[in-house]
Length: 326
Image 1 (cartoon, rainbow, N blue to C red):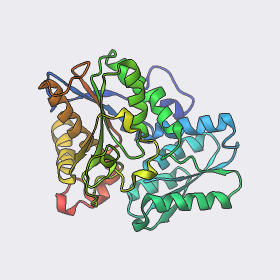
Image 2 (image 1 turned 30 degrees about the vertical axis):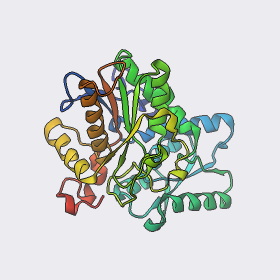
Image 3 (image 1 turned 90 degrees about the vertical axis):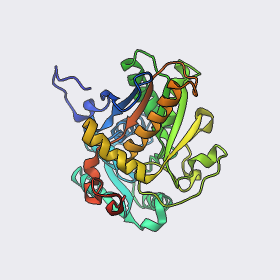
Image 4 (image 1 turned 90 degrees about the horizontal axis):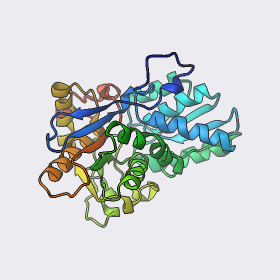
């Protein structure tokens, strides 16, 4: 976690170095540890790519000084980029499908960004198309495109992965993380496999998502409520590299919703459905390591809790499952 022992000059200096905390429901023989990304200043893991991508793009001239970043996003990436853009004197415009969290959109606007909504039924594909249309209309505008930009993966290879390994003294048996853009898992997995090529890597998606089809598995496409991970069109998720993944674990919405509430009530984690799905999948992997079904180099599992449940209160995340809007 960011040190309290000396003053810092910018909020950007507080990005990263988040705590790694034991998930108590995991087996003692193969404990699960979760990276609590809500400790970032914008309260999600996307602060990492917001800072990293903008700084690299300014350095190499891809983004002109004083230019405009236009990004299709479900919300957290927008907040992360907006935090960085405000400190780096860059304008920010975000294209967001209507159904996504109102709290996230309000925070993007509070950070000085412009939010453009697209129809829910057009999905992220529609948001991506609209972002590129806007970029053609604005001078010095670029679309970082988190779904295909290698800097997304690189940010986690350079920061999140090493932080996990430092905290666990390099003794990591498996990496389990949700896939939205897939940048988080791909970056950490690349780093992990360089440390030990036998490290077990599992991607997490909601039931109804189609990442598992990339690994040649049968999956039925259905709507899902879990927000921030999963895909209905893997062709738009260009960062996902199946060569780095041992399996894709699907978590039904009902299970994720119940785990959101368990994590809060039993362990004090105020996290959202993507973190809950990761928790369940990581515990499943840990139990299989304990039982000898997975041969991992160490008896431990690291996962990611990407953000806070506070961004989803308006959707009834702590109510009953039927009333949860997702």
